[in-house]
Image (tube, rainbow, N blue to C red):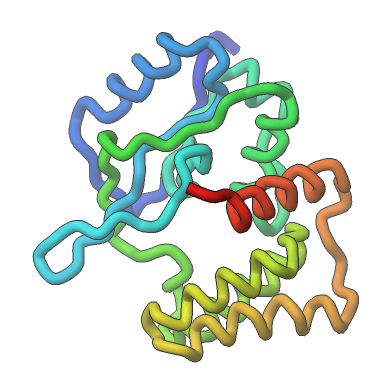
Length: 195
């Protein structure tokens, strides 16, 4: 029972030997930091491409939680979208969540590419986004953005179709409404912020 941090780590990652040392230094320097990670990068055509991620989003493949934060959010929920829900709950409780670009994590498999048929993975992403309570305007913008990413056009359309198919079928959503409200507020701020 004597621990200060807990780490959730996927098996398809590579990082420098001092990755955790540097990450723990960030926690020690900021008492309000409850959850953190580096940024994930994918090797492509001989160079590293960073996977899109806002600075307050902690990367799912490698998450470090401060004990007090982990206990206050009730641990990890056994549900779809757990790696967004934990972050939103931490923010609602006043914790800072952060990913750092200078702490490089090599991700040997791109996010949402677990299926050979990429459009199927995007369809699943759309359905998951509905479950989490994404704002419809945000998912439309995200789907439009994804039409310029492989697989061109169909991937973005699949995100939108997955979301609105779930909406039409009135599939269940995450039950904690304050978490969904917080998520939508953040999404609208990103959509309409200037500069």
